[in-house]
Amino acid sequence: MNNNPNKRKLETERAMRIYMRMEDCHLIITEVYEKLVDRDFESVPVKVKILISDLRMILKSMEDDDF
Image (cartoon, rainbow, N blue to C red):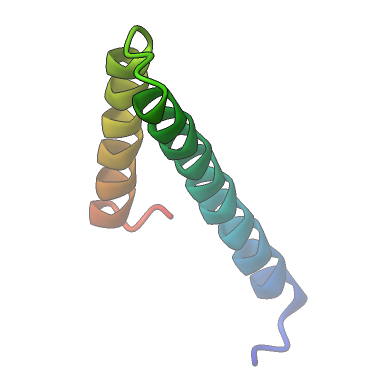
């Protein structure tokens, strides 16, 4: 474990960013699942497009080593 407080702070902030992004994706996936099960398709395309966009941002962040 690194004893540098600044490095720990940066890693904690990074972990929180990852957590928040994953939480957002999880919420969207849950909503899409519920809508599909209920055969309530109206909002599903928009939610799926948002999810795709979020996943592309994750890929971009990984490519740029900016996570």
